[in-house]
Image 1: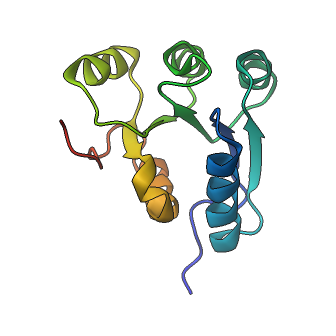
Image 2: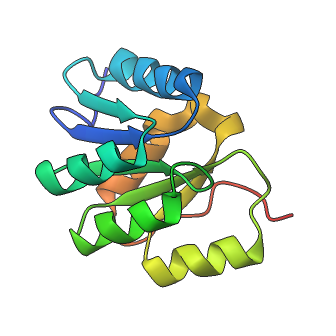
Length: 135
């Protein structure tokens, strides 16, 4: 089995749904047991972590815990950001995310594909394909 680029990476996941955070953590640690995944549902804890740790990737729910604000903070710290969404992505959300310079979106329905998705983003943090469908 090929070694994952996630090896020894530290990831922050922020979502208001504990089950989504658990699924993400399970998927990531199953593929790469030596990753460190920090999880929170709280905006203020997420802000503290973004400024206290040097994450290799930040995964944010666009509609929860003030996701776009957190994305702005993470991008300011030059941390790669992937946005999660449970809803069809609107052109407005894409525009806002592009203005912030987040890397990409992953629909929550594709959480089973989160590991290759994150690996792709980390291999080329300057631009990844959009994984979801508009509308």
